[in-house]
Length: 528
Image (cartoon, rainbow, N blue to C red; front, top):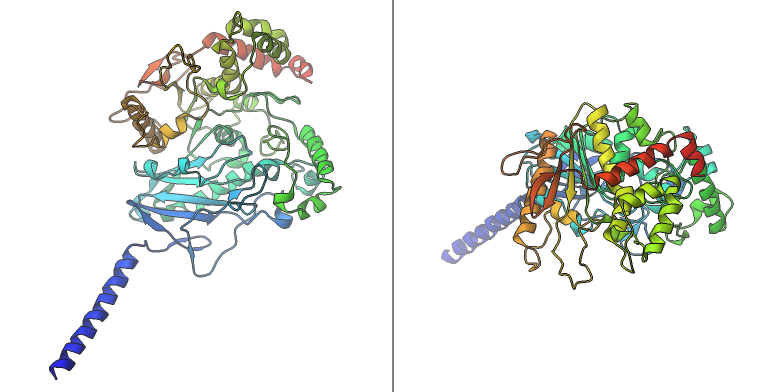
């Protein structure tokens, strides 16, 4: 009898332990969240709830290749959202981690319930519209989310799959345009955010978009596109901006083409692929498509008259833009990353070829050196033509033509290289600030200084404050005044955050004269 009693008690204990263990395992997973297309199962990660690989549009494959994104299919049951989906096709198009089926987004949320209504930060990665992925560890949004925002990262089609234009594709379109599919993907992702982010504790009326390089250029395009109206309430750009005119022979800062020019490039691409129709091109597997020429043209957004109805400078001048607060800036040595000239003779010749009648004033503002050493001014001209002038102009136009504030920064945090170092005289290259914004400097990296960590902490605070309030200012960080034409104050990120004047203002004014002339009939005719 005693033995039977002990056995029954042991069985009861084991059953209770199993129930407790099951409950504990269930507690390690958040309850499924319902979005418009079905239920999603996320994971807990260090105090956040994380959802990866959420479809926001149908796979753009088969007959949907080179078409605007279509609605995602609904699913039955609970969909696991615990891993990133493959990266968009890029480069050679080969790799187990790449797929044409790439239209997915990811969410990191600190919200405890759907009623938290936290501000939302939406990240658009860079990579010259040819490379990049939301799964890049640098773009993990956990540290920013812990500052009280819902963080979202959106993927989009790249290269020729994202931006090919062709007359046959334009004929298919009810808007008689083609190209810009990657930008349309971003818009579809933002529409998904508007529709679903409240389920993750986010506020669809407090959405801020931000990106770097091509992602920052995309942010400026979204600020100018009527198709993105009402989808966000703030915009931040790191080393981006798109205020230059179109040009058939493209340069950094003048890298938009017209639809007609892009369609001619598309016809050449079909010929390169050995086909005579878009139907035949759609049948070629994505990883077998010939790579397009890197850069503007087949693998870059275009001025199509629909997604981008006109050049951005004109749209802002005419007050035809999505008016929100902006926070924009660039790095001190962007030009070091863009094939700088190797001799003074090359620098002078390239400047005269690109800028024509304005070369003299630009060489005066960014002088060539003597002897064999090419001075930093040569890199600075590239920096300002590609980024500085666009960012400065964006801030000026928003403060003059818009109803909201603009905040302008200059990132110059870098080691003080010794005179005998080959890097002596160099500043902060393109993309360096991303690790600071995301607070991903590496906690055990011996090269990271106390000043680096201070800059990183303050930048992350400024960025998330901006998402919360449309203003980067708040407790614990130096005051950042709004930029205006009357008070052109810039926040410098160097050693400690501090304010200062617009850098290289003489050069920016010389570039401004050039870019304004390029928008005139004479300037347009000269650039043909």
